Image 1 (spheres, helix red, strand yellow):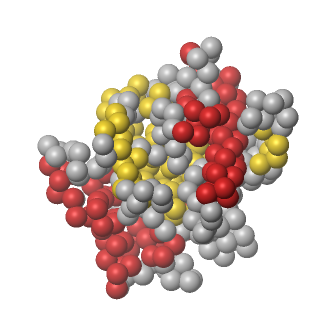
Image 2 (cartoon, rainbow, N blue to C red; image 1 turned 180 degrees about the vertical axis):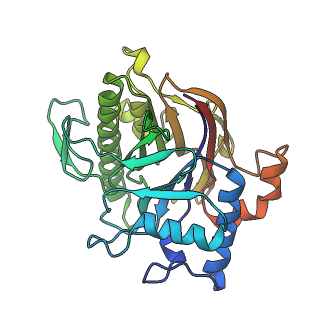
Length: 330
């Protein structure tokens, strides 16, 4: 089956809803929703992973999926989207998915027999000292199964928004160093846990898609050189098991004076004050999935793409990330 998929960090979508979960339709939030809706409609995807979606309350009175459908009903009339969500996070940025219910089914399927659930603490040796430490996902990755309309499994999907490496407290350089290492190890732990789950799927002969804001890219930065590993490359897999390695839907990014290209977002270096382009949003797929097309919907890079250029203002103003889009064959 051919599918069009994407993942989009929509930047604090919670702000686009009233306290009761109804979409805001006026003011700056209503205008931003219209921009986001124009992008989602233009993507024409069968499956969209949503990062920083509206929040799910533990008591179930308000859910990410319910609010996504209400939002689509308001801003994308005539849509055929349904939605899914998983375990609520400790914060106010949730993971969700929207999908074309006329083409596929998507269900929340957390793994329970082999390994811990993503909403539970887990042990991981992140320092290669043969000592496991306890970690917990701040935002439990969303485990989904994509099925065709005859209930045949197409692929397992993990949508993730892993630990940020950013430090937003006022600290001196010694404390900055300490927090940087702590955050990096937690990021490693989360990605190792996600990779373990991928191995469980692959051992069953299932296709795997991992998508989301991993807050990390390819190659090694200063801290990754220190620890001799990169979080996103942990998810890709082990070179000693090449048949289980995941592949990016995008070409290998290149480094230039402004950062990485292609890039899905930017950040400000808190020491130099410089703006830096980063590719931290990813779609990674297993070998059983053929990638027909992959691109970042970045209007500064896709200058020859008329559709992306027609949405340039929306893409720049709607969120602080650009969507990652792919066409795949399973």
